[in-house]
Image (cartoon, rainbow, N blue to C red):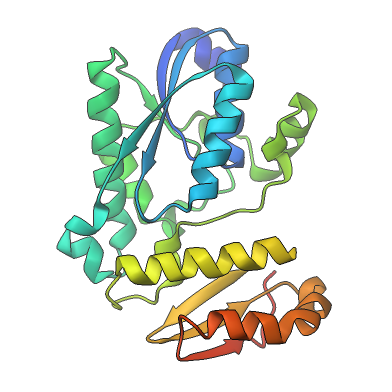
Length: 249
């Protein structure tokens, strides 16, 4: 199994599908550290909250890496808007098609993403799109797990090393419920409010016109202290708000 730096020795010019999360952040760092010609492409749609873009910009600036932002309207696709079980596949097709087109115009033939060895392809419909487009996943191919990447990121001094996993906003909406800009913005606003209160690794799930709040067990005391404030704020956007009795692990 080759190392990450051996990968870059063989591929000295690469484009990165960049999200600003733990994995793609470390991959960008490793590429810059290896001295290769790399450009990070961030595909921005209503599925990504603004703080993710801010983190991506900050990381690229810290590393002195090239970064381009591609704006997409994924809800223009009626299949994505309808939110079927395999929505992620269609969304990823739009995202990677746009990144590949921009990268090719800029002279980059090899496209990579931050899929790691801990990711289960069977649980990620979007992986199918990656394979169809020939996107490389060097973290996975080099056997680096999520835990490995966090350790390496901390050693490298990346602020993303302990960043919680943050799936796109569309994952908050139950399958087959139509995705709207209004619902996405409601989730982003409400989750931003809870982040400001100090919550980590939580979700606000949309079920019809209602919301289900999922938090970690260690945040229960904080929730109890702020419950009235949380419920009042979420109540502006949702008809009914409940706390999920099962804690996030």
